[in-house]
Image (cartoon, rainbow, N blue to C red; front, side):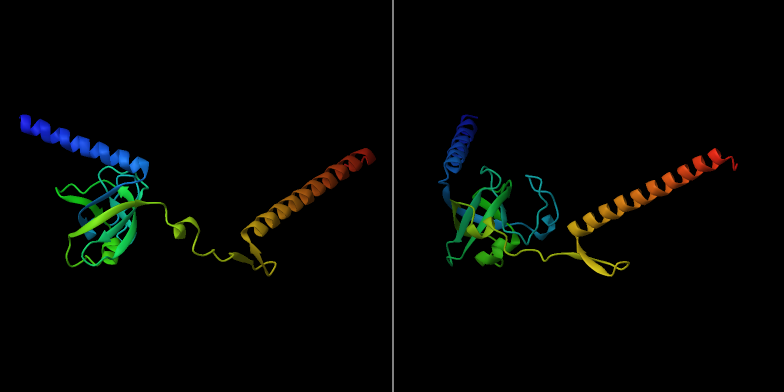
Amino acid sequence: MLKTILKAGIILTLLLVGAIGAIAGNYKTQGKASYYADSFHGRLTSNGEIFSQDSLTCAHRTLPFGTYLKVTNKKNNQEVIVRVNDRGPFIDGRVIDLSRAAAEQLGMIHAGVVRVEVVQVEKPAQLLQPEFELPLFKMYDALLEKCYTLEEWKHQRERDRLSLLETNIKDTLRTYIAAICIRERGED
């Protein structure tokens, strides 16, 4: 019983030290890494995202979601930067669970479990800006035989609506005025 309490206390202390180190931005550890089985693809992660085996993400027991980690395979020195979006691994001796894409970049697919170094890093610069801009989307109006961007099309529809409204008001007024004139002349 005392052994269990001491073991739990030590684990809690280590978790707290790891969390405090992560908040300070200097988290660094070594241990074993594994990667998710393909059957997890499409399921929800602990932070509510849908897990994709093609993304560069990972599971960590204590680090805050959104933390970026550089993971280095100690055997071949290959590296990958991943983002924490799940909790785990829940197997003793493992410090991180990687997506399949991250495991491929580390060259660990055949091994399954490898020894790694994990270091907290800032958000990578390539993720701060989009890699490309979307092309300008245009719609074709067959009636007017003209292309519009979505914004131009919206403004054109608004102008058309106002024009139609003006036409309807003018027609209604003409009808009303004609009816008044007919009554005044006594042409009922």
